Length: 437
Figure 1: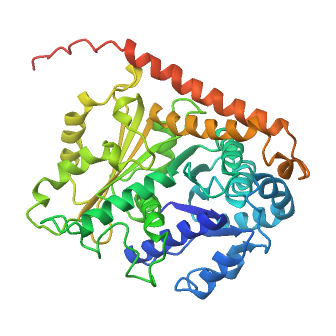
Figure 2 (figure 1 turned 90 degrees about the vertical axis):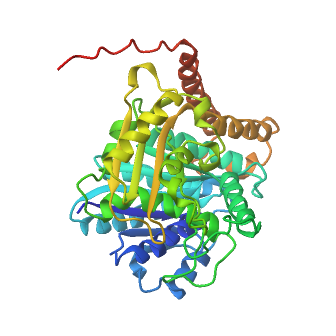
Figure 3 (figure 1 turned 60 degrees about the horizontal axis):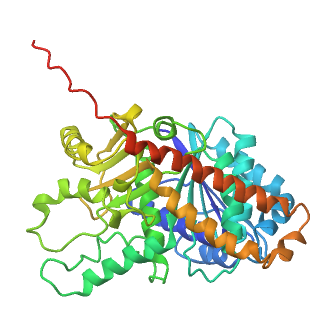
């Protein structure tokens, strides 16, 4: 069996990571391979005192007490320099306990200081120490109403590092998670026949297993945790049609910098009306490409696909996969040079409480809308040089870091824009000849 090491950095990274381990333990007794890093002790102390205290060894935890003060520079330069050797040592020890190390999963947020700054510092360390091991990053992007005023700075500075040092990035927007959770709650309490949600099987439910009482962000964190559960299912369960995690980057990333993959999960809930599931399987595939199921606020059908992966769990046949791909293919605009750009994986073990599930990973130009919004919020702050002095007081930080990060982001957006422009010039494939046999 192949193995992955999960690296959880910052408050958000550790909360999401622990939801992942919580849910993974409900699927099977899994020996964890994780490194937990946070420059505040609060979340990690909760872990040591909570239901997962038997899961983690204290040697896996790297903490400080003061935090990064929502400052990317403090996390990246100050704590990155102070804890580099400790972090590298723990990463090596964890990797040595793997029989067949396949990938690193880094979980972090973009808006705060530790997740964005120290998180991207850890990403560079992974590249330096384990250059041959795939680096997949789950990044939580702040909403426009984020209460951290410096989150646009932190996010754009982190974006440059993600573009340069990650193999794949799975961006998740906070606002998209809020919208999904609110929609599920609305359906749950609407009282309409057939729309009541089974709480024990809802993807947002944190109850059961080793979980305690549900906390405010558990519903949002669980959605990201389920993303990780689906993407790691091939490494956690045996199966003849499993997708090797290295194949994600190999098949979905035709250009090194354009490695941001749009994720969608389905089903996001289980309806209690038993008369509905007759159309659930095909509907699951349809939902995966609808904007309501994307983990960023975007509609991929209106943009250009470079490639797409479908990772299915449960009692689903290969014929079901092929039928739905052929059904959906005409509605999805793919680049002309990769019309057959589909990758599929099938794990026979379904998630707890569901008969089947689907994770779709799309390399799609729609992701640029998230980046453009982020660039606009950054520009509003930087134009006034607001809060800039807090960053420039940190050793190693220069004002040029801001302009370089902004230029890198603009270059990335332009690359997506140029690809998007080819959609209007796409020429339909010539009619295929039917060869008599």
